[in-house]
Amino acid sequence: MRRTNLGLAVAGLVAALAISGGQCVRAARPARSSQGGQDDQKSKTQRYVLTGTVQSIDVPHHELMVDGDDVPGYMDAMSMPYSVPDERALKALTVGDIIRADIVVHGDDAHLENIKVTGHAKPKGQ
Figure 1 (tube, rainbow, N blue to C red):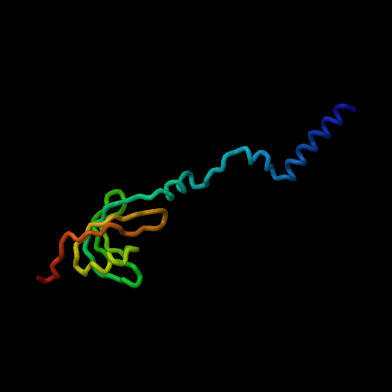
Figure 2: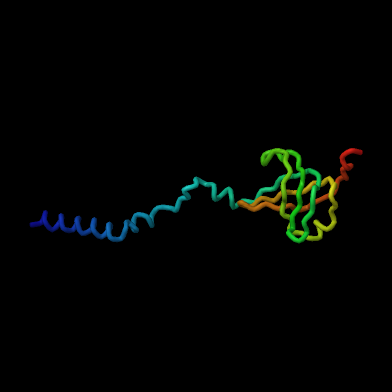
């Protein structure tokens, strides 16, 4: 008779765990990201130095097109648009300005800060 009661108790415990979806076991384990730490890296703000030449300025959209040099550890030289939250900084620039700025990267978002004009490119053909 005792074996039957023990067997029923174990079966009841197994059934209770199955019904609860194993929540007792899951609650004891720390949560893990399926991306293996990538979320931690995305949440950190990183800064890179950009140098390049201003190709166009779109003040209403807070955007600056820059023909940029290599940014070691981030990207190769290329022309691309950058978000610039500081409208005053955008308005102070002109096409052809050679700039140095910080690319601030946080997750999938990137924008320019601390934009400094270091020179002015001569128009092509001169």
